[in-house]
Image (tube, rainbow, N blue to C red; front, side):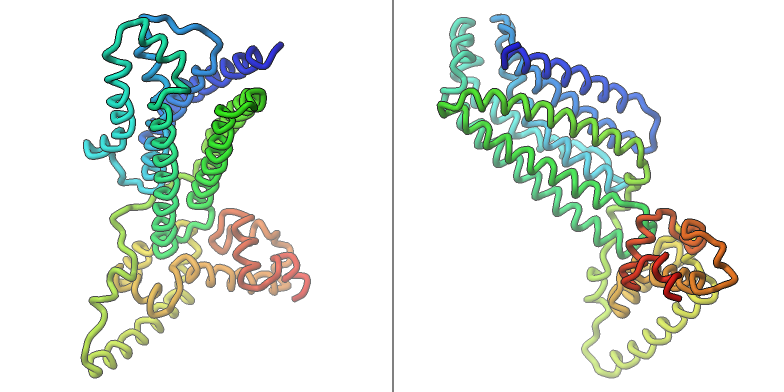
Length: 381
């Protein structure tokens, strides 16, 4: 089997598996249907993109469809960007304004109008046959590069904001949405860098390497898609969104400042009193034992407005809500590990008892505060 036949076989497998996964995502029952649908359409468009590697002669009468197929990749990264928003924020909804993300696809096809869409059948066929040497292909590739890196950077910025909001308002240590989407974005960045490097070989004498590069990238893309979907199915807790309307503590701070020393002094006394009351409540009532505790729930329990509580913890105590709560969980775990009467309890039982629901998250947090693993801390006690 030569390289072209092998590439054709791999492309057919990639298209079949991709469409199968897309069908599953569109039909599976889940709370976050929008995110699943966005990712399913990304997979469908990727499958359409893969068909460009098939070894076949495109019928002349469908030449327009072939060019649309070639440019449909300009819709893939916008779908991933919208997918990230849908995963991160549970109140995200598609709106008419999001159609602006289709602009590169529209612009590219408008560029093709004079020398392709308005031409006759034979001229269209010749255009497609020589597409790699046409000026339009250079504009196309520049547009793809600009668009791709624009969305890669935009996704990193979305995740940065998401992480800040999460740490200031949530405590569930098993929710690793940020880490997962961060990894996913890096995978896309690396794969696109390899693809861009491979495409440069199109204009050199290294035709053999270019063909094998296509084989490698299709296999890699297929693996990544399968990995991504399987990860989502195996760990549904990764995709618990937060509310995008939640403000960061720093957004409240200008209203907390006052120009007069007397008022500032009074504020300091009130703040100290609130901090003492909060710490007393955490010690006596142990709300941190709830693994899904949020700053809103704690606000309701202690009867402090959520914005005041956010400023109190994130600004005056200089801690994220996530770290603030986990300190109490780790301290309770340390007390249990030192208690000889509870030596029969396993580490797994202890982590559940103190509010964690993931062994890896518990070990990471415990080592962060003690520089020891839970087992090593118990043995040293």
